[in-house]
Image (cartoon, rainbow, N blue to C red):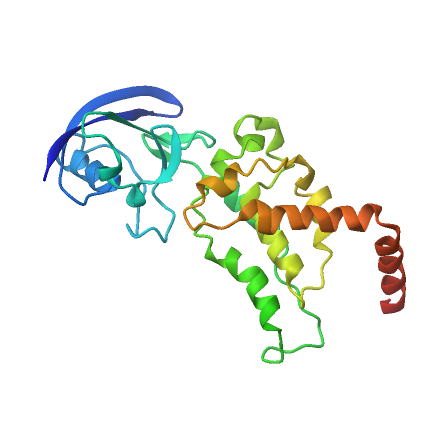
Length: 251
């Protein structure tokens, strides 16, 4: 059964703006994105919002709903009290372009900095053979839809603009961890994770895991194991010695 919902939506450009109040019709079974589309159609035709698939798989409609980073297409109106005011704001960590649309180019710049999968030169396409356990280790991370909610909520980026040049954020440290787990990747990802992408800045608060719409255990399955491997490389004398011996024998 339908009802009228009170929405408070951030309107503005370039970081300057304010929250504006609207009352919008809500039908049974709808999500926040449905209501925003109705708001565009009936009251605010110039409201800017980014979206694409409306199925929780493209990551485009990331925003903050009642202060929590979420996907608008996966946030059901039935989870709210019909009498409460729903506040919708853009992702706080990234510069606002207009209304609910933010400039997330920071993330694509970080993605470009990560060296791609680098297999041995003597292994040709079609010759890769992996154990199922190796496939399963990194399969979870492939579910990432790059909504950048984890990047948005990470306080290292969110609260410290000065950290951005040296810190890739949880999404891309997870990518490095995934490649580091791959049995055919030949690059030294551990040193790069620490020295170039700021793994040491992460203090494993698990806030990135909490907001992931795909349920990826970013902290437990990617970041903590990567930290452990980096520490082993640097401080475990047997691991350190072994890396020197194998490096010498392969050169």
